[in-house]
Image (cartoon, rainbow, N blue to C red; front, side, top):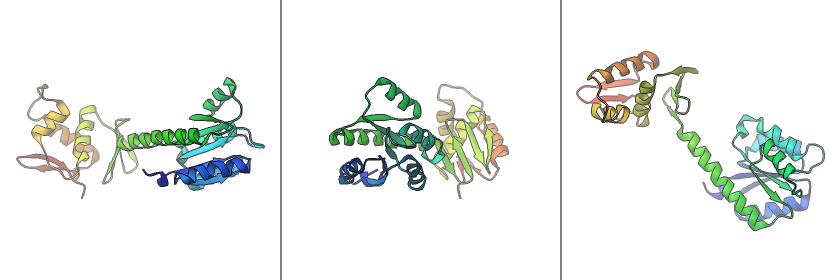
Length: 230
């Protein structure tokens, strides 16, 4: 992602700080939104879904800790990164902030180079986490495969599969409409060093068809199987 793809929400009750931070971040081509209190920050975050939120701890009314707690309750913001701004250096303040869900701290007075370095590093983490989450789920046709939980979702129903059936389906859906030879399936699902019967693949395919639908896995005679995504 380019800097211009990232959305950053700045929240501070001091206009000079908002202007200062906004100027430095916009200069790096980030999309920047600003708010001066916790309640409006929550509304703005729900509307704009920022990748990163820079949040002042000491604000009147709803302070940064409470605001962060509320932001983390919003499912769409579960992966948003929070940096706290604080003039307080006591350890207890930092620990309370991390308990509230903060990912990092920047102390006032703010040094632009340090702020931009922290922002860049944390947005790299956001991207890496998003890519890892995306790679853990495969969506093809009417099927969603959750590789972390070893379940599939079809028509909003979760189906738990035995390990080898799950691995076979994951392989077939990794390249929809590609024909996987029996030899390739044996190698990638069971391993070359495992001896299994000739009908093992057929049995697993039959069980998969019973659970997800006979029309999704096609037999290519004399070659192997494919997942039909048409």
